[in-house]
Amino acid sequence: MIPKLLNDEERGQVGIGTLIVFIALVLVAAIAAGVLINTAGFLQSQAEQTGQESTSQVSNQLQSISLYGTTTGSEVNTVTTVLTTGPGSEPVNLDNVRVDVFVDGSGAQSAELDGSAFSSLDTTGILTPDERVTIDLTSDANYQGTPGVTTTLSAGDEVEIVFTTGDGSQLQVVGSAPDPITQSSGEVPLE
Image 1: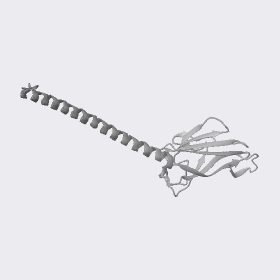
Image 2: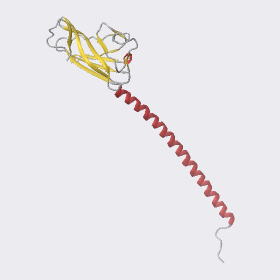
Image 3: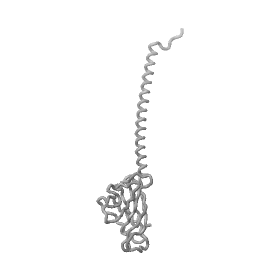
Image 4: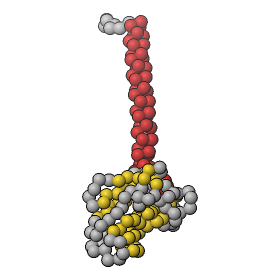
């Protein structure tokens, strides 16, 4: 006769232990799957937000059409630029645009635009893709409670203007006063 290795009672106990281990593994796997799904959802929403911000920064840009100055005597005392939105851009709120001006390598002068800087738009300050706006940069204007920027240029002086929209996109416009300034009053192109 062959001896029995396990009796019926011992076989049942081994089956229950295996079942407990199996259930524990399923619970651990379910918790791990829940954590992975939650993390994937968080990363997806963060990626969508980053994508939208990047798209706004790239596509909601300003574009310069012209840059000229107004002379009195032998100096350019007002710099004027005509802007529009870039191709495919959404409307740009000019009240959220910061202007940094560098005259002949000097430190930046900064101002926030408001309605006193652009008279060619309606009072909303929103530049839509089919509009153009003329912006006069002068120390006479007040931009959002701060003094305007000094844009007095002598013959040959270079001016660099950086417009930064609320989305973070930047437009750099560079020009220089003619040398010599032959026109005592009027407009001169800054090339």
